[in-house]
Length: 194
Image 1 (tube, rainbow, N blue to C red):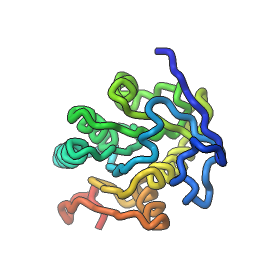
Image 2: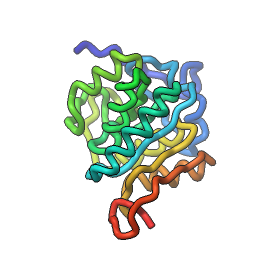
Image 3: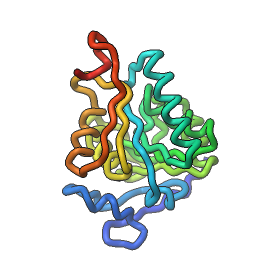
Image 4: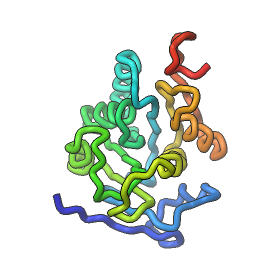
């Protein structure tokens, strides 16, 4: 697929204004797809990569309900809850906002490769603060989480272990005074933070 990636620089009119809320606002944002979504109401649906079947069902229902009511779904395109949220959104003809921890040209096989194209084809958008050919690096996933928090109006956590990256997103969300919602789980289930 030929990618038409745009680069929005901090200070330019197309740069998403909600990213300015970050103390470490990125200098650039690389964008593939419908950039208008970045300035519209959206909710982040995040959670465990190794999600339970119940977690998957809950993420599907929440994301489908939100998308069916015109809410854009933001997530990190990681395996598990992130991909489930995006797929459920697309199933309702909703719009997905995928935030990457690597360059847009790098097709990281953490979902199914076609999910990228499905998001773009349905009118969604994929963004990254990293140049298009940047490879994945463990440290960049934490940086990505601040972008997820900044782009969303609120955050829903479906499942998250004690040291989950989802909790980093929640920490950023708290600093940015976003509404945070947590799906309750079993008291002995390690995927639900107590």
